[in-house]
Length: 554
Image (cartoon, rainbow, N blue to C red; front, top):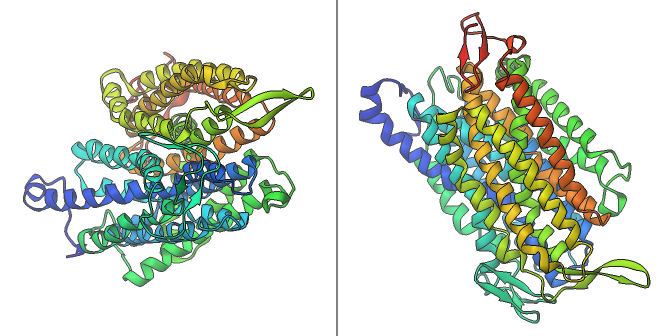
């Protein structure tokens, strides 16, 4: 039965007799669906590297806009996605949002078969790839309702952690499937050396770049069927008490997603130069993000009926100061992870794949470095470590306290980011940048590991600092804000590479991490924290968090 009328997982007898089997089935369909969402959202980081290798007629800065566009849209769509489950049901939401991923996958496969495809087509497809970014918020919210509180940590950790492996899966699978004609079509000839997990592919070799889009249909089609026939809507009072029919549910999801698409598209138009199909106004990216987030929240609240009623209740989280504190701290961890995952491949390609030499007294950066490392061989390792170590961060936080673990990770992130900046500068001023690739790469792996551990520890802090009725919406909101790292970081790195100063980007990120150290200490680690009291709307009392993140009544 698709709709569950009775659902009480805190009842041990019900859980053991019925609930556990149903919850487990929904979880194991949710995980690969979320994995594909991450893959389609971030595959532009790999595709653009191969577009450079094949000689697509776009500047490096234009290709960086594709990862930034997907990042901005995916983050924006997490805002409406945070509220889908209560309004539309888990089965309806996961099926529909997973099926929507087929649109950018097919479109990307078609567009990549022709080098003359205009830039605006790729930009539109990057915009649609944002479907995958938005899916995290609805997926996590859905799974949280299926498991009892004592098992939610493991269930959410599996869903989020294995879902994040979509980044690594994509970075390994796409280079592999481009080496043979899996879906037919004409091959293209590499102008520059490419690579896969197992080695380099020399210039002059054939490649089927369009497979980068089509390969996801192999997973998405059966997953859509699995979601429709294997998942459930929960109609209980606590989850989706007034669930509309399926068609209306799909319409509500589409309408709320459309608001996110429109606000993101307007923001991108304000941001991008005319040469990249933007307005040319040059509105700063920081202002664009604020405008996009604010307008999305505003217009969602203007929707009529059940949507408006539900959102007004959920929006109470914005009255809690810790919502804003944790938004900043979560952005430091997950925002850095997802932003570096999106930009790492192209950064390796541009910084180490070219010689940086002086020609007629001018430093140039467009001479191919035949000894440069293959981005496609190495880029997957950072996201792999960051995702794999994420549950470890939660486990350590259980022992030492979420805020303390986050603080240690912040210090490591400052040091490793400054180290990466140093070697970026050295590489970008050298005719033999490959000589400093190893320390650059190892420090970046440390940076990824710190983001992963810190991401796990912030999850625990959110669960402990907020009353239970606010923890879910806060998790969705902070994940939406943090996901803007997938837009902001590629944009900043791309701008600084264009300015021939890529190290400035990492220095700026290190400065932000240093600010987060101060914020985390002020609210959660210092001894006198009376001014950080939180009023609990559930019991009416004031609380303040211990250093381990748990509430106490002072």
